Amino acid sequence: MASTATAGAVTTPRTRPGRQKRRHGGLTPWLFAIPALAVYIWFLVYPAFNSLYFSLTDWDGLSPGYNIVGLDNYKAMVNDDVVLKAAINNLIWTVVTIVVPVVLGLALAITLNGKVRGKPILRMLFYTPGVLPLVAVASIWGWLYNPDYGAVNEFLRLIGLDSLAQPWLGQNSTALAAVMVPAIWLRTGFPMLLYLAALQGISQDQYEAATMDGATKSQQFWHITMPNLKPAHYIVLALSLIDSFKVFDLIYATTYGGPGSATQVMGTWMYFNVFQYYQAGYGTAIAVVITVVAIAVSIPYVRSQTKEHDS
Amino acid sequence: MSSLGSASVPQPAAVLPDAVVAIREPVAGPPKSKGGITATVVLSIAAVIWISPLVLLLITSVRPLADFIASGPLTWPSEFTWSNFTDAWSIGKFATTYRNSAILLLLKVPIGVLLSAMLAYALSKLRIRFRRAIMFTVFLGLTIPIYITIVPVFIMLRSMGITDNLLGLVGPYLAFGIPFEVLVLQSFFRQLPDELIEAARIDGASDWRIFFRLILPLSLPALVTVAILDAVATWNEFLFALIVLNSDASKTIPVGLLNFQGQFANNNTGLAAGILIAVVPILLAYVVLQRWIVGGLTAGATKG
Image (cartoon, rainbow over all chains, first blue to last red; front, side, top):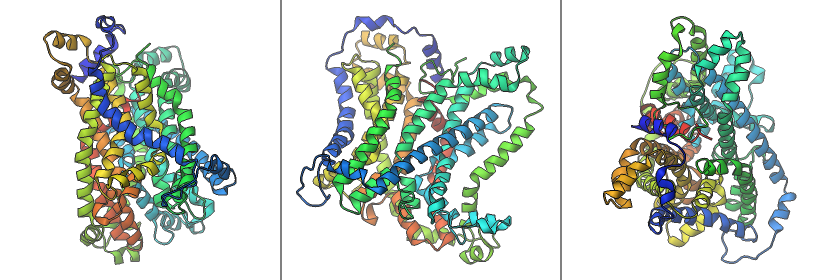
């Protein structure tokens, strides 16, 4: 059934006969749309704007009253070393947890797309970390990194690198990198799946023609594979970017932002301000900043998803 | 042959990637008999390394603590035991957290899929006004981090008296699930031929009847995919659950696991068993429903 629909999708012309006849359908479409829109606005849009308002107050999150303080919270962020640290960490996090999984995922997809046995099982294994709850991923890696009896240090001792055994999550120099490893672990499967799907759409004829013309494997990769993957690159990068701004669970559950503020990101620093230091106004201001950045960089993607079939 | 990956063509929720793979593979390589051994071996080794944290976890969870401490994490157990699981199950209160997560999932997922399907239908097949604006607004929700909403949502739930209550999570979970579900479903609905709907309309069927009796049954693969992905996201959600649920009686699996992790910091084998208890349902579901999950994940992606 689905494949019939697919075939239809490819051949059906854009302008369908029924299209121009009916104008806007009046009330009925709204009856279909309103339940979901109401929930969406009630629990997402309205709270987001409400946060914008709270970010202009000095509310502590507990007292009944508060004052409007204008942009004071935003000004305070400039002088907050932890905000600076968190912003830098967010940036590092974004770059590393996009670039590494995308490159690894592409390499895996290309290899899997070649002559390989047990393809479905391999594909399944590489994506497995991606379905786990982030808290569980954090627990697993916290356990692996344990300085005394964790498998990571034990492995280093086993191969004679005792000197490298160290408290990976517990020291400033390694904590952020150590938290990014599980992020890479769980995020590599997704680009792999997308690239694999995209690679399967590239016609073999192109490669055969290129081979006959004497093109090397590397030429084929750069001149056939990569151009054909362009839409996939776009989606992978857009979704990874969106995802990377949301980082919270993994850091909260592994290092709690520490040691010190070594692994603090905007999401966790926002949380600590609201729920530990009782600075709800300031915390929401932090959330507003990162949300605005997240939206700004994602607008092209959202627009592409909206426009697509209208052209 | 339908081309799943031809990314410039708008795709339906490409729910059957395996079918496509299965069709393609025999065509792809006549010289399949030989070769591929090196790639297979390399990938297999990589896969084993990739999955090794879970394997270690499994091995650790079935050995006595004393054995673990004496021989270290990278050894084969000298004896086996189930007691880590029974200890972890009762101390981690997994009976409660399992029940809570299951209730939440059963409550949230069907409602979410139905509401999203209705909106997706209005956007794809009914001539709704402000369609582009609605789509833009809803899809923008994909990019919004949860933590921008937690303070107002918490206040809202407190005034409704449903903090520390699973019911309090339903609204926020629905709202954050809607963008993705609508994105996938409307792209699937759009591929259903308009003629079908017109024919039903000429036969006198109302939009509701068409939706429930025609659109939904025809879209079952997409609905199932979306429901599964939504179930995984609901089962795993942490931040809302962390701020809304306080008492042990109302905690879901991720929050319960975090607590448990704190308590079992020095009991490695028990901790391993507890983590496994928390992830086994999701792993089983993944293995069984893999085809649908992969299809759903690539659905939004093979277009653009």
